[in-house]
Image 1 (cartoon, rainbow, N blue to C red):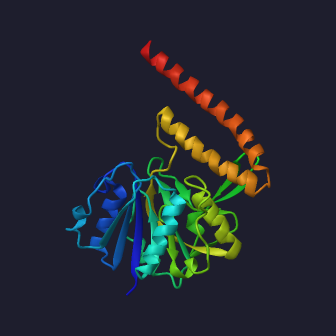
Image 2 (image 1 turned 60 degrees about the vertical axis):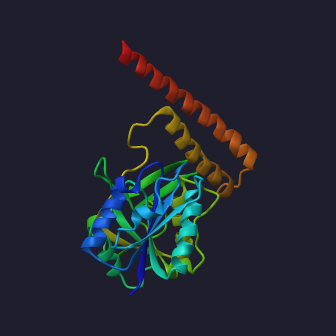
Image 3 (image 1 turned 180 degrees about the vertical axis):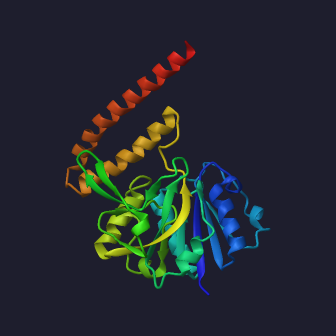
Length: 283
């Protein structure tokens, strides 16, 4: 029997408060199977002690804390390598704010010799499907035309050309990893899953899809303070810079200046808007 690895990345939150961890434990209780859970803690200070997981019997827990907020691309690559050394055959990438459905593992096991498995992922806020989908990019403006998939007509697999899937729920097999595809460590947050999908599509014509009610708290859907918005935009522009240089062949310094102008304008507009709203609220 093969071992299935699950990676959960947490930041400044106890994993015991994570909807992902709680739903995963429920899955392991209701659908027992050989499993290893890798908990990567990206927090400034550790959220746990290893001994806190001693009483969990449904899976092996491996708590990983190194004191730095590591790039997601690096985390994914390192943990997948660790899991394969530990004789795992599949690795499912998860974040801290998703809900894993009970039939998730069963549906993966029903696929014969999968390479990449992508679940249908729905926004926990709107209920709308957010992944997988197709995206055609305009790298100059860092915008894209999105085409959603009619899930009712999907059976088994989809064409990989221009497809996009969020990282949460994405399941990678040993077979796929052996082909040399990796997460691009030039990127840290935004674009990590996008570029992985792009690299996958260069080698393979299709990917497996499983229909399930996988819930995910999509970034940018909820209200956030100015500091968090500023951080999020910095990661957004990191991917845009990557695209201008790698996709369009721009000089790296020209790309940075071009993006800096857009970033300054966007942050100024956002700051002014938030402060005006706060002033009106106080009136």
